[in-house]
Amino acid sequence: MIKGLIKKLPSHLRKIGARINNDLKPARVYLVGGAVRDLLLKRITKDYDLVVSGIPAKTLERWLAKRGQVNLVGKTFGVYKWQPAGWKGEVIDVALPRTEHVSMGTGEYRDFKIKSNPDLPIQDDLLRRDFTINALALNLSNGCIIDPARGLFDIKNKKIKTVGYPEQRFKEDLSRTLRAIRFACQLGFKIESATLKNLSVLSHKTSLGKKEGNWLVPREIIARELLKSFIANPFLAMDLFDKTGFMSELLPEVTALHKTPQPRKWHSEGDVWQHTKLALTSFENLEWQKFFGKNKPSLNVIIGTLLHDIGKPLTLKTPKKDGVDRIRTDGHDVAGARLVPNICQRLKLTSYTDSMAGQIKTETITWLVNNHLLLAHGEPEIFKPTTIYRYFLADPVKGLELQQVIFADMYGTRPIDGSSLLPRLYQLQKRINEVNQKLTQGKLKLLLNGKEIMKELKLKPGPQIGQLLKIIEEAQLEGRIKNKKQAKQYLREYKININNYY
Image 1 (spheres, rainbow, N blue to C red):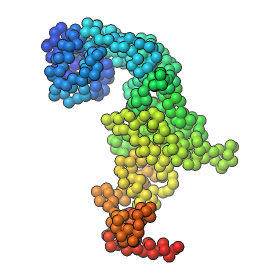
Image 2: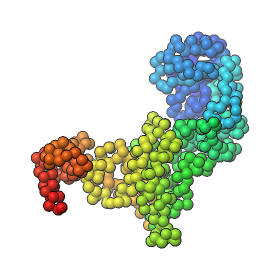
Image 3: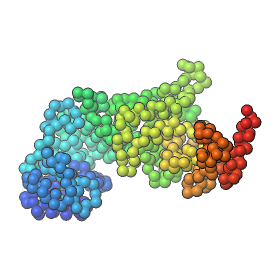
Image 4: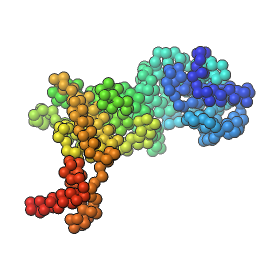
C-alpha cells in the first residue's frame, strides 16, 4: 500500500468504486494502467481505466447502464466505454479481467484475440500488458497496489521495459515499439537495453510492413505516436527516432540532414542535423518566454521546425564540388516546402489532434517552411507595412507561428563570432506593433472593394483588380490615403502614371 494514493483520485471516481463494491458484491474494483503510473509520478491524467472482477459481464453492463451512458463497442471482449452521470471527465473504460492470445504473430495492430473472464486474477490481467510501468493496479477498496511485473521498481529507476520478453510483446502489437519511444519522451525515462534493441530491430517492419496490402501498423497510429513524442520532448524524440531506425524509415527527408554541411561562419553548431536538434530545444528556453510568454508551440510549429531545412540536402553546393565561393543552399526554403505535402499525406499527420498543441495543417507547415527565411531577406525595420500585414497580421495565428519557427531557426544558428540573431526578431516584433496600431481591432478594412475599383476605373474583372487592391492596401497602411475620396483619386493618378509610362 502507498499511503494516501486513493485520496489523490477525483472524489467522483472514488465514489464509483465504493458503489460498485457495495452494490455488486463480491466485485472487486481496480484502477489500472497509466492512471496508476501517473498518480505515482504526480502527473496530471484524464484517462481512467477500471477493471471489475468477480461478477458476470451482463450484471456489470446493467449496473453501468443505469448510472450513465454505455458504449457497447468493446463488450464482446468485456470492455465498456462509460460516461457516468455527473462525470465531467473523459469516458471511463470499464473492463472485466482479460487475457490476450496472439492469433498470427504478424505484429499487426491488435493482432491478438482478447478473452474476458470475471474470475481471472488481476495479476494475470496485468501480465498481458505492454510495459511494466503500465502493469499496475490500485485496489479502490483498500488502497493496495498490485505489481506482478515490478513496475514500481522501474518507475523508481525511470525505465521503460516490456512485461516479459520484448520480442513477444512486440509481436503481439508492433505499435508498442512506438509507444515505448513516446513514453520515454513523455516521462523522461530511458528505454531498457533489451527493449530498445528489439524495437530497433523491428523499426522497418513497424514502419513499412504490410499484410494483404494493408499496413501492419495503420498510418494514423504511427502519426499519433510520432506527434505525441514530439509534443512531449522534440529534442529527445528526434534523437530516439533516429537511433532506433524509425527516422530513416518514416522521415528520410530528415535523416538526410545528417552530414549536410553548413558555412561555419554562420553555423558553428555543426551540420544541418545538429542545427535542427538545437532549434527544437528552443521551445523550453528562457528566451522563448521573453518573446512568447507561456505560449507553448503548436504542432505546426514543432513539425515546421523539424522540417524547416529539409530542402538543404537538395540544394547543397560546395566550393570543391560546384566551384561556388562557399557552402550554399540557395532556395532551400522553396525546395523544402515542396516536400511537405507529401510527408503530411504519407504519414497522415493531419489525422491526430492534441487538446493543447492542436492539429497539423499541411498548408500551414508548407507556408512556414517556405517563409522561415523571411528575416534573412531584409531588415525588419524597413519591411513595408503590407509585408508585415500579410505575413503576421492578416492571420494572427499563422503570423505568430511564423515568428516562432523563425525564433527556433535563429536560436539553433550559432555564428562563429558568438553573436545572436535574436535581436532581429525584437526588431520584427517592434515593426509588427507599429503596423498593428494602424489597424482597427487587428483587421484592415480596405477603403475600396473590387466592384468599386472596376466602376471607378471602368475596368472589367481580371487579375489587375487584385493588383489594384494590393496597391490600395499598401497606400492605406502607409497612411497615404485615409478615406474613399482619397483612395479614388490615388487610383486615378496611378492609372494615369501607368498609361504615361507605357
